Image 1 (tube, helix red, strand yellow):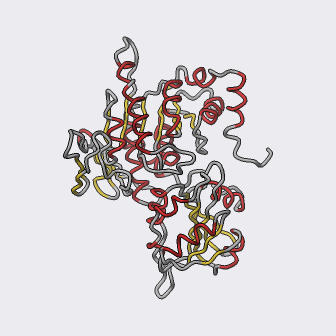
Image 2: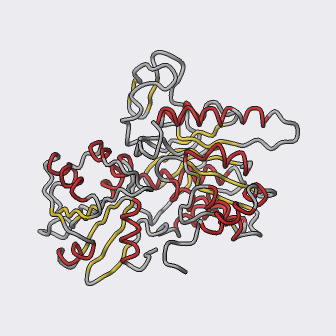
Image 3: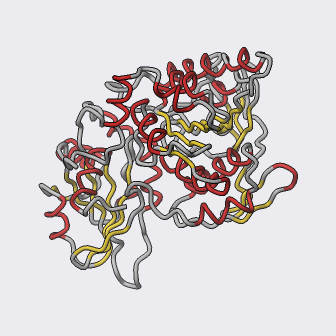
Length: 404
């Protein structure tokens, strides 16, 4: 009502102030799935919600409000939903797991984020391992339904953390960004990689054999010889991998991949992510990227196919450094922008000059514009790819009428 956001937090904030145990109360009696990781949480949550929709109404924090206030709001808004899928900020996994007693926890990846708002990634993996190890005690409790973990076997940090859990379903979800997994999180030795396989020469940590994986670009392979064609509207290999995780998690609720796949195909945009908006003769596609791994995946989604003789579409990069983004922009130097050469690149946002310096170092030609509307006026009619971090993305989305 005030125009300050989607309203996905305020109800939970007030509710928890009145009753601090409200999240526990609202989760009681429901079949809950938690989705956590550094990147892809919101998309995977949306895909899993779609898959579980075959069982009936599903409560979910679909706008990405991934802390307890957002979880409480989501559950309160769907009091009759017997199933819930909650995206969880990776730092809150311990709290939310204890309060919701989930049936399934899906773990996607762990990579560096802004250090002024997020701990060092190895320390976070250690916290996860401690939390997941405690599930063994829960599993030993008579009458308790054990929490099952679905984890990405291609990420050594996730593998190490998840291997402490009593039950793990391994998914080959890929790991394009490997800058945080050169050394073994268990013993510190240099990991050896050969193709998709990885192993530590100093201890017994190695890539587990996956139960679910992408057999090819359009087919998900699973246990018992499952071969399920999956067609998505969402772009990029990373989203096909997110779909594999969603199908693996949904199967633990009894949802057959054949029933879930058509639901996944209906998902076209998630809170503006991947949305395409027509404005003043421009076809604007919105991509969200908040950290180095996310930017790497976004660059892969940038459209490089143009009509014969036409240049590739222009790309607008927008960077802010507000509290929820992280105030430190030094992470920009972890990103390689070389793949943008050949595109017309425009730069905007609160910290546009920080990004401009980074592009200069990377020898990527660019233009600085003061605002999104200036960028829109500067490019000719046709396609425009927009990549922005969190608050910059929300600013642009608001300019486009809260595009979904």
